[in-house]
Length: 348
Image (cartoon, rainbow, N blue to C red; front, side):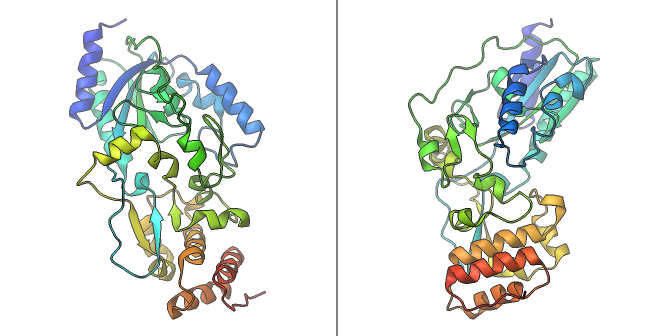
């Protein structure tokens, strides 16, 4: 086992490279997490989501990603956010993008993790960076490293930072001392995230039913369930609700003055873009099969929830898709028309 001072040096390297918090966890398999993932997947709570659910045996055993791994240096990067979005200057209908998706925060995270990996390699150790990857259950690793506790929202909350972070790790064959015991629960009796979820997707503390989670539904293939389309409101990518009502996050958001807001996208303009331009602007989002029709699907639902039926451009956009070639988009455009009380007859 290497000296704690070496761990301190690695952590300092990551912090200097832009990371918000750094810790160390052992690379032993996460057997308890694997059992939970398999149980929830069998119950259908994954809702078709593949991330970490695709192969729980692999994603909970770090040695599958790097044979001989003994430790994981874990990094957390807080992304900037503001409690209240700035007023939107345009009167045209706009779609809301969750704060975590307004920039490529993982690129900055990888820079910080890469600096740690470079230091390990320079000292003769193997190192592999994993971030936003099915090969690692990043929340479980951050919890084991003592960076935070599991909130009732199923997010990991870091003291003084909350859950407004992206997480990743560096696998290494160096034997590094970890924190010992995971961090104790810090939520207490608070249940705001459960009570304020728009669809009741947090079915128990720490348990999310992805079939009702708006953040997942805008990424899933196929039609958005009709009974949940109204709850999407103006969202076209992600949902911040459970994070925005969380007290630790609200404190972090209030302290975030002078940093960027969530993104607002002009819905009519988005629906007018060709495939290449749409993906050039929004391709950093997770889009099923990299197919831009799913972004249009989300925009049509948002337009049905927020558009002005007296606005000719809104009627024209919905009518165009209701008579288009794509059956999925026709169905969503027809729903949007009904939602706005428009007389639009879809093509059979």
